Length: 425
Image (cartoon, rainbow, N blue to C red; front, side, top):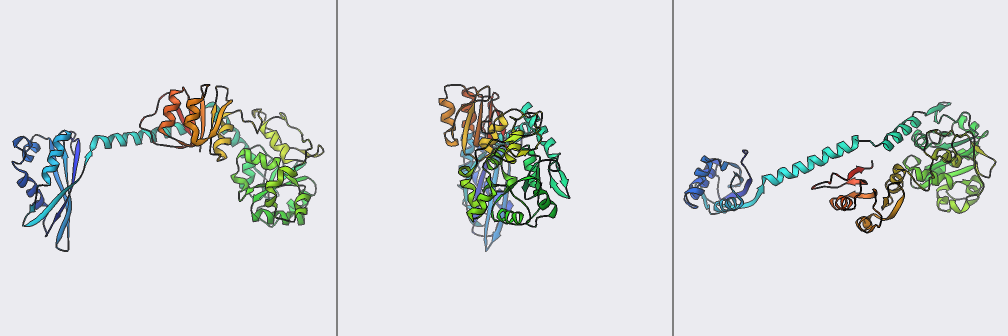
């Protein structure tokens, strides 16, 4: 294929006998000669570089020959189609009867354009992945700092405040401790299986204990063992068939907020995870105090409070991050919180935000286009639990939207430069 190639003619050949490549090439030149006039003669076209070489791939089986003919053309569309039709007039190759049928004419420039679009999309995705806004940088640093805080207590994975906290959260494994650390809970300790270590059993006798367990049979077994060898005050359960390590910040806060006294679980005589749907109704209404927290309203302090006791007497000594933004868990105010609530929670919704990060409108993800188009106020940001398609970015550009955060990336023919697309991952 040379630089002047615009189209590729693909044709299939069938011969009633065994023929070779030279036989096919000879038939193409010989039986089309003079058919379309001197200007469209194949040899003339090849000499003027308007047609490339004739490529033939054939194989024989059972006394018959099958193959494909490919011809590169620098002619225009009409002339290329005429040349392709001429190939179908060939009736004999070598000594055998043959039939040639044009399969398709490939537009080489369209294929190149597709490659350009695909590669441009990949480059853009790589660029977006490497580009961090100020909020992203701060959140990343904060999370890494929290994860770096993981330590050990008697050889078990634990948060840095387990040793001196009045309240502890008992979880199943190291990954659960890391997840809670990421959300600001620094008084969690892992039991690493259903065989409760003696050090954890002793620790529960001196602290206010919340067992925060997976919503499956494994969580029930750990709770049963823990209650036999130690003291449990409260029980928090992940959603049914979910693990603590997989929960989003909102789900962690909800589970801790909906914890129930252990006596309630004991009296129910049913698996602990079966009480998850009733936890909110069974929750007590007492106030929670947070000891030694420099900013009680932060997400970290709230996590600590939820992990501690209720009724105004128990305390959770879970140190808050001094640089943590002041915010309510149930009312996100930063972009990362909105992304966590919409995309991290698999909500299947879309949320439109104004310049201050306040919610303008929300609804099902399937109504994203109509919500953006009909919004009286211009959204600055769209958070979409779904695919960011060409239509989404087009409508976003029309309404002056600056940022689209979506769960996945679609295919774009073109992307407006005024719209920044981020993929939550």
